[in-house]
Image 1 (spheres, helix red, strand yellow):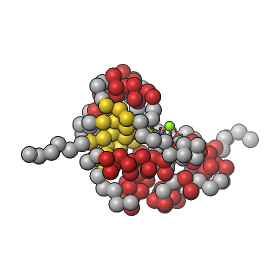
Image 2: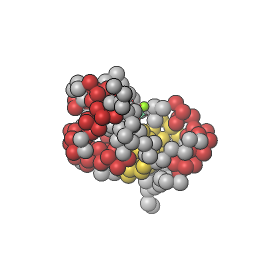
Image 3: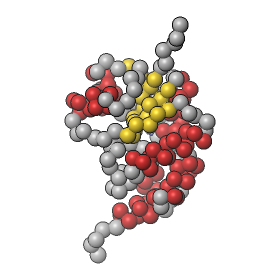
Image 4: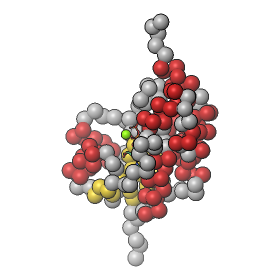
Length: 175
Ligand code: ATP
Ligand code: MG
């Protein structure tokens, strides 16, 4: 008999992808057959809270996972619909069918549970440091952001001149 594959969904904005995300996805990838990773707010970039494009975030995630020998993942960028009641259907229209959703975000948990999904909360890895907000803050102040992200993410951010992009976004046109 053919065993049906178990697929899990993990959703984030990944602005940028950091070691907390990486630790969670590594665990999920070892528990299930395939992990579907959705890049949320895919349309946003070049903003202080959302500096990187979907393509750049795609590169950060795929390089980091591949360089750790993790290959059982798909990445799907998802645009915002700004309509919570239809958001799960919107995501469903873009991804393969999944059996379980992993998230620590209470709204995402609520929306998927209401649609009958099994939702699990992954353990948080040193959330005080490993957060997108903290990485962006350190990029702005010139502190050590590199220690918070996988080496592949340092490479991508260097390649796209990401830190200078954030510094430029901080400048205003007022004196
Ligand atoms: P931001 O500070 O920009 O909101 P974030 O670090 O919360 O970034 P997101 O892309 O918003 O990252 O979140 C994606 C998922 O990763 C969420 O479910 C979030 O709770 C989870 N997550 C974030 N940081 C960690 C961490 N250190 N350990 C485990 N999970 C994390
Ligand atoms: Mg968050």
